[in-house]
Every structure is written in structure tokens, then in C-alpha cells.
Image 1: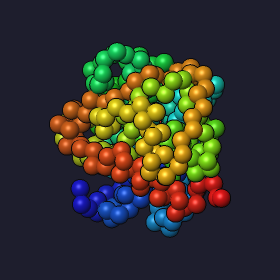
Image 2 (image 1 turned 45 degrees about the vertical axis):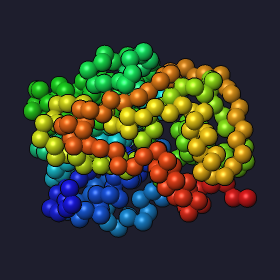
Image 3 (image 1 turned 90 degrees about the vertical axis):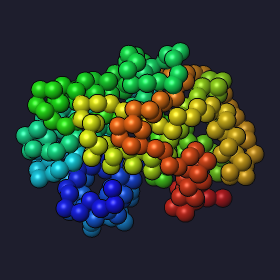
Length: 322
Ligand SMILES: NC(=O)c1ccc[n+]([C@@H]2O[C@H](COP(=O)([O-])OP(=O)(O)OC[C@H]3O[C@@H](n4cnc5c(N)ncnc54)[C@H](O)[C@@H]3O)[C@@H](O)[C@H]2O)c1
């Protein structure tokens, strides 16, 4: 989609890692409105600082019905990213994390129906599959959530399906597989593995790996996810459905550590820690459905994405200084 002229978008969680990448991409395509709703609990105001004058910002909780009503007013497309996005945090704080995920999503859907929103695209997660010997994971497999976070995302998907059936609201769920890229937070106690590894390598510290390091993930550059969201807004046969969004490549944590060490020119040291509750062993996406119905194709591969991410972290001085 070359131009989004005349269209009005709401990005919930737009101050976060994926949300801020979405916001910046949307702004490049000249839409009429890009509105953000975020409480900045895990996101950062700095993520939006360079585009602050180009967006409408509503600050507050996604579970606040009156606020969400204002946020969806006059909007064509909602890209719903707001969540507390961490498996280990959901194990420690199940009430708060699932409340934001489930109550937040149902609030967005209900207000979107009343406001006449054209389509709501919802961020789900590969964690809904849990552990299964079947790889790659395809959308028709049964859900097997191993954490409150994953269970919450599964509930969101069911809510989306039911809102499509009951209210004819166009909903599309995207199951993201381990997304990485610029503006992902490396400093949180719950930081995702790639920003964490880049930071530790830059500081010449050993990489912490939970378990033996042979667990695998389908690491996906954020630009691919941005593309998938835009496609999901407009693809004809997408409403009411769920799509895997990954690269379709399986990489172990030990392999990832090797590539990062090579790209950053750093010697590799690894500290193995006990495995974490709620973590799955292997994750790999079958992206056939997204290719066929959304026209999605991951255009940035792992190594290119890692190079871009490292450059961004260096340029933005996110990395520890020597
Ligand atoms: N990063 C990944 O690998 C990944 C994988 C699967 C799914 N997801 C999903 O993608 C979405 C974006 O994740 P992210 O990695 O950008 O995380 P993030 O923490 O950077 O972004 C989430 C945003 O939601 C906001 N938020 C949290 N609670 C809120 C509330 N109550 N009200 C309003 N805003 C609130 C945060 O402040 C933040 O800006 C989430 O829904 C997450 O579950 C991410």
C-alpha cells in the first residue's frame, strides 16, 4: 500500500516497541490521522518524541471505557498492540497482565463496534501454541497456553472471532513469533532475548541463557510485522481469521548468540541458568496462510534485521558506553 491518504488509524500501545514502529511507518504513508493510546507502563515517550507533533496522543489505560471511546471516535482502522507483553511477568503477576490483555481487548472491540470502525487488527502471540511436537505450527492446531500471558492472548483471539460473528466487526488476529528490532527495550527485567544479548555483548558480559540453549525460535524483524499489519487492514478474506506472522526459520539460542557475537565482533561467553516456567521449547511458524490470504512475505531476514537493530542501538546510544 503506497499511500494511506484520507485514512484514520488508532495504534494502541503505540508508545511501545512494535507500536512505535507501526506509527512511524503509517506516518510515512500520509494518512489523515494517526492516534496513539498508551499508558507508557512498558512503552516509552522517547519512542514517539520525533513524531510527537504529527500524532494525536491519548494517555491512559486501555481498560478505561470512556478513554477508549474517545480513542476510536472517527477511526477507520485500529491496530491493537497494547498489552503487558511478557511470559515471565504474567507468571509473576497473572491478575494484572491478563486484565490488561483480556479486558483491554474486549473494551477496544466493543467501542470499535459502536464507533463503526472498519477493521481491528489485534496482536496475538505464538505463545498460544505452547509446547507441541508438531513443527512448524499452523493456525488450525489446538491452543495449548502454558502461561497466563498465552491464555490471555488465546482469549483475545476468541473474543475477536465472536465479535466478528455476533456484531460483524471485521477483526484480524496476528500471531507474532518473537519480534525484534529498533526500540525494543533492552533494560527491562523482562527484556526479550535479542536486545538483552546485544546489550550484554556490548558490555563484554556473558550471555545469560535459560536452559541448554537448544530451544529454538522463529525470530522476526519488526519491519515484517509492520508490513503484516498494513496488509491485514486491507486483505479481502482476512476478517474473522488468525494468521501466523514469522519468518518460517528455526534458530536456536546458541545459534543466535553465535551470529550476534560475529556481527558485533565480540568474544562469546555464556552463562546457563535454570529453565523458566512458562517458556516453550521450540517455536516455528507456518506462514502459508498469511502468504496466501494477506499476501505477506517476510522481506527482511534474520541477519539483515540483526544488523539494522545493532546499528540502531549504537546510533541511539542504547548500548552501554565504554
Ligand atoms: N515483541 C514480541 O516478540 C511479541 C511477540 C508476540 C506478541 N507480541 C504482542 O505485540 C504487542 C506489542 O508488544 P511490544 O513487544 O511492542 O511490547 P511493548 O511493551 O513495547 O508495547 C506494549 C505497549 O502497550 C502499552 N500498554 C501496556 N499496558 C497498557 C494499558 N493498560 N493501557 C494502555 N497501554 C498499555 C505499553 O506502555 C507499551 O507501550 C503486545 O500485544 C504483545 O503481546 C509481541
